[in-house]
Image (cartoon, rainbow, N blue to C red):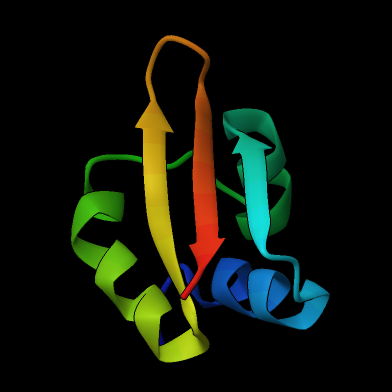
Length: 67
């Protein structure tokens, strides 16, 4: 089980075309702050029908798009 699985399930279950979540919202969902390992784990999201669209360090947001 991936440490990001709670996030992947959240995205899949809510079934929106696009999500833009703040780092704080991500922390609430997964229980910890995202780190560089997120770049490695983000490929798992395709199994759930989504992909990471944009990671904004300035805005502190991550955008997810339905494939």
